Length: 269
Image (cartoon, rainbow, N blue to C red; front, side, top):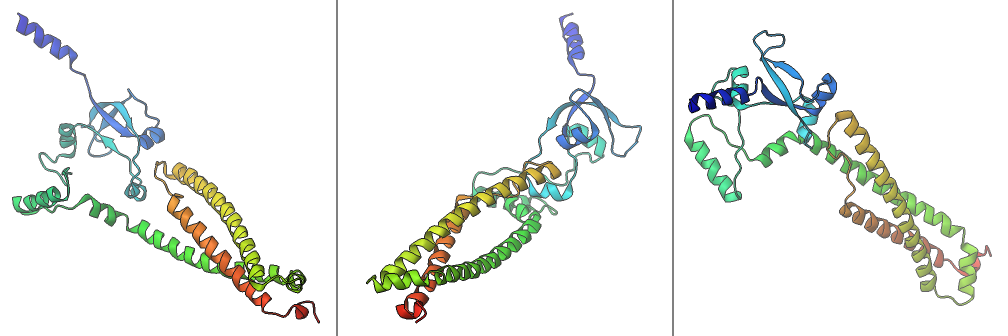
């Protein structure tokens, strides 16, 4: 009697339908909420589908490979997936977690020796292979950055030459007052370095705002938490270093060109 009662209770507690979890993009596009009943099948419109209940909505991960495919994701129980896919006890691929590089190498050797047809790969290698498009974009951005730096250096040098040429009389007056060439050069170089720092600060601010806008826009387009643009401390350090070096070099070249000219000639005599 007790055994029969326990069996009845277990039958009553068993859910009527299996549960699945769906991608947040699928939930948004198809207007599906938690608790809704769906019919899943291997082919669209097939009458032999299973009725399931949506028990969870998955947040998309920051995976660059998912952006190009733009696929919906559904997670279900393994036996349920086997029944729908008709694969039985077969799988296309599976992931194995290892502890350290040595364990990874040992696992790869064991899997290769287990049976013919297995081909293990490191997750790092797969990530690199699926991110080839992003590597090309990264190289393209580096090329644009180099061209921009060279063009900005030439533009900065021209600006400094024009600014120093406008102060010909001031420099001539300082030289006639007994101020040495080295002091004049130091003053112009210090002014150029200060201007370079101010320009660098403005550039970093504009870059940060642009990065925030890019992330906001493309996260909305692709509906992913992936970071498309990132301003790191190393990038800021590189920008400040290049700005100082180019500013000091431009100020030095412009000041040396001016102080080598005789003071009276600077006055036009």
